[in-house]
Image 1 (spheres, rainbow, N blue to C red):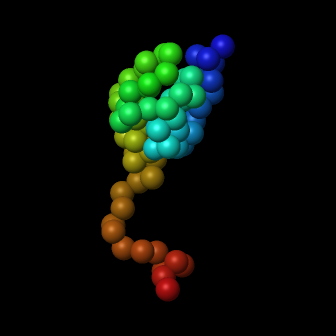
Image 2: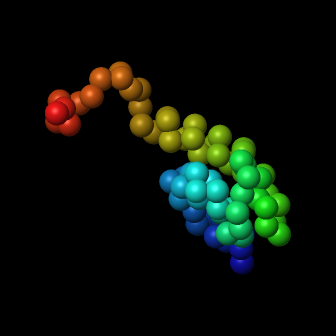
Length: 71
């Protein structure tokens, strides 16, 4: 049942959990990318995959703010 939770996670949920140091699989605390709970999963590869998928879908960034959001 716990593996189903990982399949349902979107990239943003996975990224959020890892940033908050919560294992996406079992909910235990994490140190860097390693779960400290019973599953002991290493989430580094999933993090890198999610981050690369996110950067591809966002498209290139020019570093300039958009006119709509300028202060």
